[in-house]
Image (cartoon, rainbow, N blue to C red; front, top):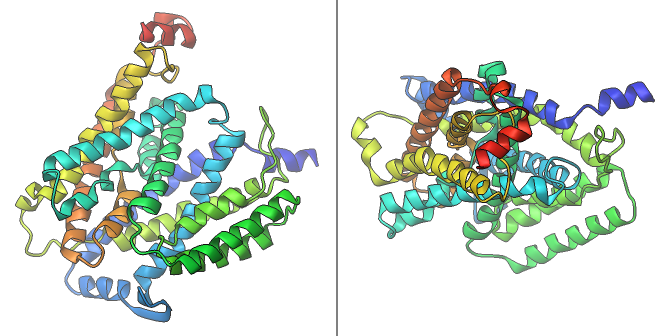
Length: 416
């Protein structure tokens, strides 16, 4: 039993970082392949035909017959959001965000890192008009892509920065989920909302009754997905709601409990999310045909606002909030990292690939021209943030402990 616990109870954070790093690299390759295929004669038509292929059935009259693209964005991504929800719940109950002392900095940084890009975007597009609906596109961070970039740096990226990036992205995901549920939901079908709420009550009762088997929760989660899909709220929210009902066995200060239902499901989903779901989403959503476009498209309000929001808004929002929190002694910056390294990681948070593309599709549904401009803006801002953030970290002098004593003394010195 001890050996089993040692094997299954490895720190989920370490496993998560490793899998997300590899998954992030695969995601980069999937995005590059999508752009290549979308612009190659002969393959471009097949690529877009596949995405819009009618597979059926008609689940909701609002969406019509299900296409490959709908299955990926509304069904497959529900599993991604289930994983995100599990990660959020675990971190807040039994992980790095279990205490307010540890929550303060990630919450402040993530909040500033969402407000900053939104303000930059609105400033660029002019604060009014139909493009205002895209204000949330540059607000999200793609953890898989960002961790993938950090992985390329090896030991040049201190572990404390990886932990900081992960926790900020987790809180960022919470904000993105709330935005999707509130800002991008139009008409609501109250009957299906009521049925979804009933399913949630049943899952809650099962949880409180001590039911540990995952099968009932997953079956009820599938029913919840259907009711949410029919309600008008984006169906992926069902993944997060289901995750909140999965039982967790806490093990403060120790490795994950091997018998915890939440940890079991999270470990089971991790490789599928990192190596299949996110790359498939990236491949299906990153492809944009550049035929007939000129470089001037980058100066159009929508792509320019998104790119500026990701590249400028993120870095200034996150780095500025961390600097201010340290100055006010509200929270300490990550130990063992210099301000220059922290600035570079704040810039990496401007990689908004997966969630930004996802929100872009919700912001301008049915408008293929604007959705293509969203993709161009997201790709431009994310690539700038990735390349420049990587370059700074690659050549930034590492933290030298001898200069300021131990890590706590270093943080004290920075705060002063």
